[in-house]
Length: 407
Image (cartoon, rainbow, N blue to C red):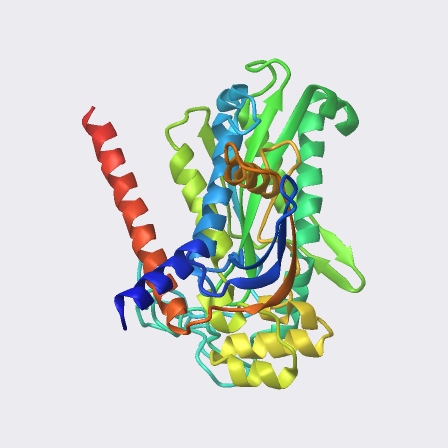
């Protein structure tokens, strides 16, 4: 490859934001001052949130998610600085069990042996004495495929978002009850805001991590974080969604933590939540996009459990969410008053890029003309450059953290 080819390849990737699969646009630009018409071809980033599809775009999406979470904790981006002193509670809720699965257990064996009932109805052991590592392929897979209730896994995933809505409503009702007022009146003096991310576990079930913030008109008065913790715990334990013949509740494993009002944990909590928004089910590229046929699931998904669940979702009529195993909700959501939004962050970024001084006003018209680079080697180069840029940022943050610790 000549030097000119290298420079052209590097320029093409850089102008596309190091995107792995940019969108090609063809059109024309009209200079409104001179009337000059210039044909133009552009390659713009795909903006895919999934790390397994496009590392560069996923990193930007994760950064925006981090900003949304952090702004809701400490202010900025249109959020008042007063939120920094509000009570904050971190919540994790999980799905119930639909059959025993292999686990990576730091305290010992995968599944403890119960001598009173050693075998399932299909003759397989209900226990596993292996100490699995988190990277073991067996983790998340059922001890017995026949005992694992795949159909109800898909149904639970499909109803998880609505169960979450019921839980938040119940928590607000619990807070109003504590204050001795109606839920409507509570909204006039206090607000319970949240940001939530979804994670598809390796067993195929969705669970949620969320950060709640309790805003009051008079900070320090009637804003006891203990009331918020109690309201959320009670809501998680009692929330029930009845849909058709199904009854949906949270699993017995959940966590409600008081984060207090300090800003010391802002970066850690924001990073913890943001990292989940770029994941796919099982962390696999096989489930990164929607399926077009049942046969495609069988050919594309190699993991036996994920394939089984995706096929189950397809056969149940949930074709559009078969790649997310029945879960049709967003992977990051928030209440309206929690923080800024992805749209506002992207609009601000676009305005910054377009604020070129002394430039003539132009009008552009573009149409979609395909996906990908002209040179097939560019996609590999984009992934390498994106990985190096991510490593550079991680190292810069590490050095900054060390300097702060030394000061």
